[in-house]
Length: 411
Image (cartoon, rainbow, N blue to C red; front, top):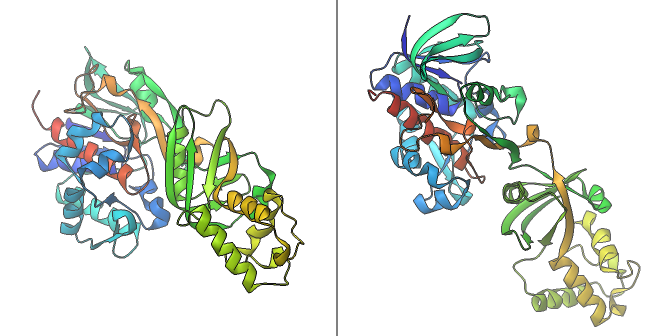
């Protein structure tokens, strides 16, 4: 049987592409190598699935890291309000949380996957699971179908590659789409981890393993990058992670050839003077106690010995003996906790992949290949990525929709 469109990859981009093309009258086949659709989507947002962001257009593009201009047409064709509306029409009740993050009201990613499956069924998309594609077939620089790993040929007028990146390989994101595209003459921007925990040099970090800090500020400011993020972070056995650290990592992906200094402000709401006043009040409250027992109101217990050691102030000193100079050292350490970033965790531990199909070889208005007629791309397989907050899934939905809609136009 000859299909109008064969979609390779059953994640959010592939599903939207397949359903959109079918809705516009095409005979569509969706191929997924896993035993079910949306495997990576299932674990998104710790299983809660922050599927988009309720911000405006400026918010969306301000949170794009790589090739934001390339995404203008895709976002314009299918924006965050449209995916919210679509999922609501498919029975998903939604809610908005801090930072305009949008979740299913149930906090279950499975509800999003069920709705997307329903979208495919309503539009009569044929689905083949446990089906791996070996290569895209072409003749005279035009798509003719696909060759499966079992050597079965499936003819098709057009093909959409939506195979994802190379993070969370256990979900099937193993870079297959890069290989298929390269075989057809496309170039690949070297895949790198984005939204990934950072590895640090300091040994004291291990002492704080598992400690979460809220409402802190982390920044990297040097000659090549200036980035400041406010929110939550966590210490790990290898370094640091958490929402603000993941966001900072996306700005560093091309700048870690040498160590980078990251500074944490543990009390960003207080000026140096206000923090000094706070210390004086606490010391008055705990008069007669040792310094190590007088900072519980200000810091997590686990952190007190680390801060005192880094500040150089004697941990056994009584609070009423602390000098003004020593208070200044404490304030400076609390406002400038310094870490040396030496690298990132591996690509497989990244939330998204930065890199992929070179956008210069894709028509941004249609997402069709400039090299092979009838070949389209959508989602993480393209060299685009964004910060946390639902933006990367919105990229998948927007590019999926545009590629599917474009494939339905006769060309």
